[in-house]
Amino acid sequence: MPAIEGVLESGQLFLGPNTRAFEEEFAAYCGSRFAVAVGNGTDALHLALRAAGVGPGDEVITVSHTFIATVEAIDQVGARAVLVDVDPRTFTMDVDQVEQRITSRTRAIIPVHLYGRLCPMDELLAIAQRHGLLVIEDASQAQGARDARGRRAGSFGNLATFSFYYAKNLGAYGEAGAITTSDPDLDRKLRLFRSHGEEVRYHHAVLGFNCRPDEIQCAVLRIKLRHLDDWNARRVEHAALYDELLADLPVVRPELVASGEHIYHQYVIRSPRRDWLQAQLAERGVGTGIHYPIPAHLQPACRDLGYADGDLPLTEDVAREVLSLPMFPELSDEQIEYVAASLETLLRPEASAA
Ligand SMILES: *Cc1c(COP(=O)(O)O)cnc(C)c1O
Picture (tube, rainbow, N blue to C red):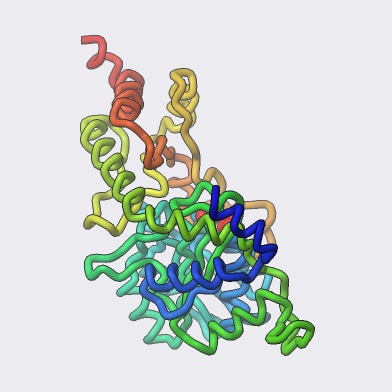
């Protein structure tokens, strides 16, 4: 691939021209002033919290139904994660619960645009404004999702974080991440923190971290970014076909939203017979996923947060029932029809025998 060869020939393997160009292109794409590329999405969350000055004694409200990295990053800066339930129709943050859990220690809210679907950002931003809180979007699964006014994930919060883990809608050939912001002061802090607090080589303004992105990954991401809208559009089409074919089956499908607000990183159905369905689909050659089987508040790693079984009942129901069907841009209609026919045979055997 010429872009990768170009990097190898240049010998500049990090913080070179591809990183700078990708940062500009990605910021423009998201509709934010700045983007700072880092090594992965977990580093992006960690540095966003750090740049925002969140630390010991602070509370950060987020959801339990997310990938564990969201909670890990809060712990990494010494703050405490306060976990709220999801809206079981959208799988994203229950906005009413957010407001109930605000205390004098709350500093920030991290909405997670889970499965590629935007959280209700207008409501969340209004709450944050009323209480003087920061908003940090975890947009790791929502690169390119946009609301009815065309505003994209990454442009709503004070900061937003992205993962370019290879399996995300925009994925590197390995690992990468980024933070977007429109605040020049936060942008400067993020740049310092990601590379040992250096402004000039071996001159350290603050003690930072090594969270630099690979120049090769940024070269790959620049090329893939040009295809992202096409790829997302294909996912939306696949989701529409699943919706049509599964309409009469006894499973809960994703709630329909305005076009663009959901870019279907995952197409997730719910069924009380989830584990059985997954095993039966596997026998028919259909690979599925469970995102995520154990919510953060019930993970052994999070025992110190003090939650118990039953504390977030909707999240716990969701974790028992969610099943992610095959979803990627290259999926064919025939493959989707095969998945739907398999589900029909399993869930309505009398109908398919007739
Ligand atoms: C993937 C992901 C992350 C972490 O990203 P990495 O690049 O794997 O470190 C964080 N939050 C969410 C919601 C994710 O899906």
